[in-house]
Length: 81
View 1 (cartoon, rainbow, N blue to C red):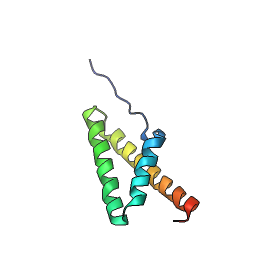
View 2: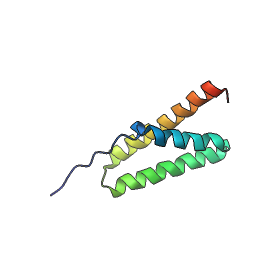
View 3: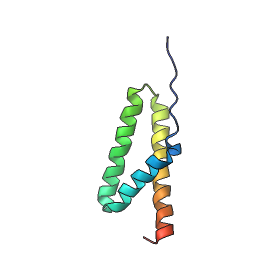
View 4: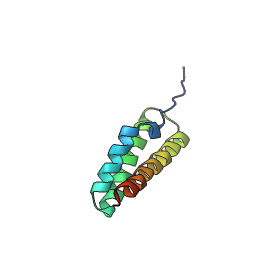
């Protein structure tokens, strides 16, 4: 029997998104880019192991990237840095 696995939308994991954005904000821009890509890779591998289709994996990764970037942008607007 086959089952369809639907991931919980990663952008709804607010604490996770905020934590990742905070890590990115606290390191150099170059290291931040590498860190973000590493986190995306980790999430992608986890979803693939759970049997989530590649289309959904890519969609969720895009959502995660945009959510972290939005969190960073909001942080810059609030703190001025």
